[in-house]
Length: 72
Image (cartoon, rainbow, N blue to C red; front, side, top):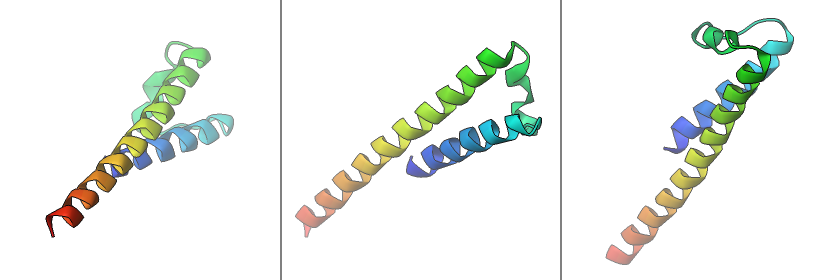
């Protein structure tokens, strides 16, 4: 889950940077169809979702490591 979260964070940040260069990822061209504000909302949601997945994945990894240490 941490990998997916990290990918979402990178995509959101790069999409925001590319917006100022008047470019966009091909798979994210649709987000500006409803206007710039909605596009920024979607970018923000992707960033927030990525952060949440990264944090939850880190907690799950730590829990698995703790269980593995207790099993030994």
